[in-house]
Image (cartoon, rainbow, N blue to C red; front, side, top):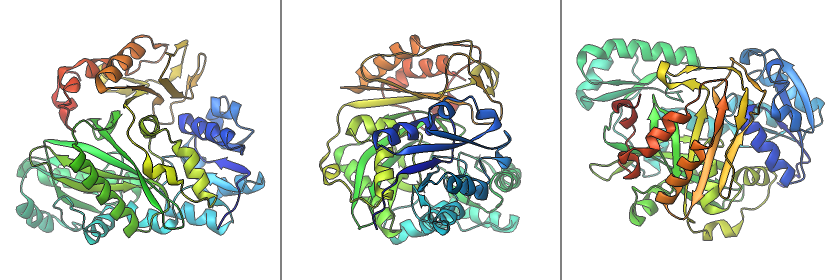
Length: 450
């Protein structure tokens, strides 16, 4: 069903809100943004066509109040709601509530979010699609079951929250003496973060890379892919650097992984933009389904650079009922792109967040250098939200050229006020292991850089 979007409500903040505004301007769509009291002076609030204050700074009183957001969107006579990432983006109930109020949800339907948001259900679906999954157990409800499960999988193993994300509710266990305490802390963290303390056990693959496939599908059964991204530079399962394509994959493996991702998407009858994530075992060259993110990814710009596709615009067009552009299936990889997340954190002090006023802000510029950021000189970073200040993205003909371009860009990026992760990112990019693509998902925490 085709329905033109004329006015869109942005149910998010920060750089992704600004990114959505940019895409909407390119499509001649008016934007309305809901902001908390702490975000009244934010760049998205200044640049949207209309701004509505949705409550106090605390997320429970503003960005997580689904019914309040719906009321604001309807009151502003919006046709659609874009959830961005985080907050309510992967809440099936929010997608359903939009539909019930005749608002287009820019993302998949509630059923897809529900199935893929539950890791145990998504694993079962991937298996039905004929995709290899990491050896794992069912939900573990007792310590006795935990002991039985670890005998099946052995050490090292990984405790994971079924409703988890962002590394919360995850614990790597290397020996029996740490098992019970890890189980209890994982359950507690999962309940605090997601309201669900269900955890399960998974075989931990130590020498691995994190690879994800960007997929896109319309409501008429057309599916396509936009190749892969590598996201192996991580700290506590939080991605710091992403790149596309991955230098770890040969064409045969790349095509197999793409095929597996599309099979998963088709099995859940997915519509819109989504990302299927895999763990790639460097010792065996096998890859395993990890999860599916049913939203726009933070790292989507590197894919845009190597394909020339504006992914946020495609999200909106598909949600409007447009047919998938046939040209997408004919796209070839163009060069190499790297994205670095710049956070207001102190790497020398256990990455403690450093909110506060930006007294100087001189971002890098130049050909094939892109900065997605809501920050500006004089802006005060609120203490209530994620510490992401922005994403610096470069594009070049080769990976080596992209690394050098990024190092030059970081060297010219001046931020005074909050401490940032810029210096750490530069050290990572300058390391021989990164240059030689020897990074694994646990490399950073084993290195002497942090």
